[in-house]
Image 1: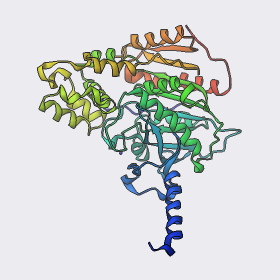
Image 2 (image 1 turned 180 degrees about the vertical axis):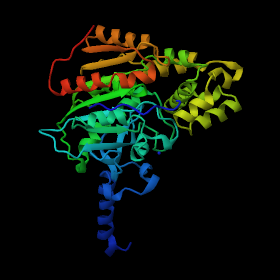
Image 3 (image 1 turned 90 degrees about the vertical axis):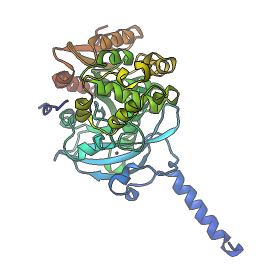
Image 4 (image 1 turned 120 degrees about the horizontal axis):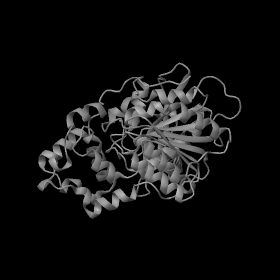
Length: 404
């Protein structure tokens, strides 16, 4: 039985002592080089603050974890803090949630990374917090995966929950976070998952972009993952096209949030250079809000309302380079894809998805594009039956359909 969402609202010294000192020093080195165990996880929101410096390790290593309240009686949950990679290739820490059905699974249990859509920009909006609180607005999609007996991991993405700005819509960083969440889930002993389990990815909207970026990065970044398929929909594949479409609309908060994310990931774009004092204050407010509140506050605004001389910085060379680097299409995924999109998507025009589909087809990607008679929000639940069926078939080893 498939589950569907509750309605969305508008829409975190002396020589004698030398041997002892050497022993202590060696223990400190070992401790610094080994990710901390779940027992050492700090309580409360301190859980989200990574150790400084970060422990040595590989992307996907668990820094620490703790049991979490599961929103479903049919699953156990753990919050995790794990190592990932920045756009610049340096280590960072990302938080997330691992959910495993309590019922036994015949054979090796598959694992799905669920890439969430927009939750907001303040740390309180992190999926791991709303999942624990039972108010995650995409729980219907996660529940549909758990109902098949599959384990699920939901990343919070870089900077959401953890310190620093949320790298919203910065696809390169989000893709790394998704792939490393799969590694973290498999390396969490309590979860009992196999490192050789087949894995898949599902995401919609912001999550569709993150899912497709993970698909593109996987062959080089995480080749050990047995990636069976990636289902991404409502995908912001062309960030400039999406920005032009929502500037001055009720969806402006998504544009403002993207500007904040790119400014954090790419200091060269220097957003503050363009903003008026009022603009700096407004976007600082946005950075602390969740989706519904921000959409209401910034409805109808334009980026030009907040800049000196009413300019749009997206056309500047630094901005164009950063945005272009995060537009989807290359590198080429090796796993099969399911793309899905609403015919009347008012946020991300259908042409953005169809253009990406054409690029993937031209590159030889095995991809299927399905269209639905809905807008951006409605298409997500409309596609659920097809998404779950498509993922089931990929785990079963059936040939992936395509419509190139």
